Structure formats: C-alpha cells, structure tokens
Image (cartoon, rainbow, N blue to C red):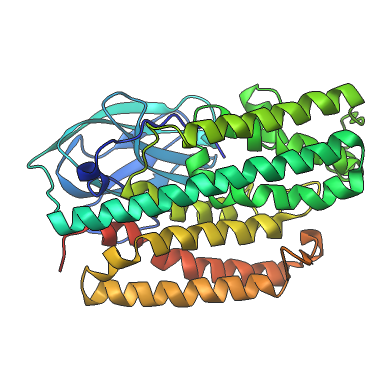
Length: 400
C-alpha cells in the first residue's frame, strides 16, 4: 500500500457529507472524464455542482495508476481510486460540498503525483437530517471502537511474534507471522492514514526500493524467516541471514511502529468519518485484488501466507459494512436489496476461503493454490466487490 497523508474531517455533521465510491457504474451519466498518462492528468471539467460527482478515469498510460480528489490544503484525500491498469477505466464518485479542491493522478502509484489542477464545487451545502446524524454518530462510534480494539490486539500479537523471532525460535516465529498480521489487515486503510507508518510496517521489498526508503516491518522479517524463497525470488541479489543484532534492530522497530500506530488511533483527536468506513471496506477488497496483493500471491511473497491476509481483509470489510447496515437499509427498497446482496456475497466469499483453512488450524500455502482455484477466488471477489462498490453512494444518498 502506498503511504497516505490524510487529515481527518472533524464533526458528526461532516461525517455523512463527504466520501467516495470506487468501481462505480462505468456508464454513469454526466461523468467528468479523466485521462491519466505518464506525465499528465487531464480532466474534462474544472467545476461541478455540489452533491454526487463522478469522475470516469481512464488509464491512457503504460503503468498502473491512481486518481485523487484532494481538499484545498492539497493533502487531505477526499476520494481516490487505485490500481487502474493500462487501457482500463475506473469510476470515482464523491459527494462533494461547495469549495476548492485539486485533481491529481499518480502513475506507478508511488512518488509525487502529476497533472495537479484546481477543481471548484459550487452550489448549496448538502444537508443531513437529525435522525441520520444520530445513526451516523452511532456507526462511527462503533467502528472507531472496533479499530482501537484491533490495533490493541495488533500490539500484543506483534510483541509475541517478535519475541519468538529475536529468540531464534524460527519455527514458532513462522507460525506466528501470519497471525500477527490479521488485526492489521482488518483495518489496513485506517492504518494507511498515518504518514509513514504504513510503509514502515507493511511495505514489500519492491515498494520500499521504488520509493527509496529502508525495507523494514513485517515483510523484512518475513524475508529473513523464509530465506530460501527470498533467494529464489531475487536470484540476482546476495541475500544473507540477518545477524542477531539486525534481528534485534528490525524486530524492535516493528514493535515501536505498531505501538506508535496504537497511540495515534487511541488519541483524543482521532476521528473517522462515515466515508472512511464505507470506503475502507472497498479499499480492503482493493488490497486483495491489487497487482501486488493477495489474490495474485504477491503480498506474502516469501511465506505464501496470503490466505490469512485475504480472509482478514474480507472480515474487516464485513465489519465496516455491518457498521453502516442500518443507514443503508433506510435508503429505500433498492438499498435494502443491496444489503441483502452484500449479506449473500460476504457469506459466499468467507465460505469459499474457509475451504482452504482457518486461523486455528492454518491455511494452505498459497503457492499450492493453482490458477483455476485462484480464478474461482477472483470471481467470488468480483461478485462481492461490485455491490460493495455501491455502498458509499447508497449510504451518503438522500433517503428515498
């Protein structure tokens, strides 16, 4: 995952007023066209009226790209769509309030963006009734509590994993590695909000090298624990086992970084929005399907424990969905059908993943899952992602 620099939007009234939905209807009417190339981000309009605004983003370049709508400060991310392969299109729908924004693309999804342009939203403030504000506050409170609980669990599990690793008990460390990651994978989009913590904790080797930062965190320890696989994956490099001092260094840093994440999430000024919840659910599935994600088997490239992460991502997305279920159900008959569809698809996805194992007994090594089976997982993931992509738009829409 790429590092993010996101400033939270404070105030319950704002919680239901800004957000995005990825994978929206590619045939959406009145969409603003965006062409992403290697060095530009061409947008067909420079303004729109407040309410739901759809950007139809096409990758006309040769590298995977992403598109952002940024707040006036140029840092806060109002909405984003990632992993747009060359020649393909993705939609981003935001429910935007009047104000000044920026549009920007990021080819290769690393480094500085390109083609930043101003974008104005005119019209009236989008209002939310008091009952919906109360439901929104309840949903945000519940999901915030869940996030804090998961980060607290993360600290404990990482400490156990690192203790085994630093003591030289590699068999135990290998067993604990995927289990220590599950809490992180359930809330990964939230973790990515905090500057450089996500790169420190969860960057893979290619991502760290592409951005010129030190390779640390989970995957640095993973590479050391599965040296044979590391050498096979990088045959042109001389990869040696870490020394005891290096194990101490990288292990201590991972513990310190997850504790820093815990401090930020439990701070009094930590604020999530309704859009953070729904888009976080979508983002978790994007993490699975990304070119360097779990479905292609690239996330845990040395240990092949991707199915643990896959399952945890889906679990986290389901919790986010459950947090906003009552709000979605209040949006009319079509929304109720969407909720029913999501219930069905989440159950089917988790059931299919369960055929490969569970946390207690372990999941099969992902390198033993052939392409046909991966295609089946991908098909079910798509069946879940499609209705989930409609969740933000449904939750943020006016009652019908």
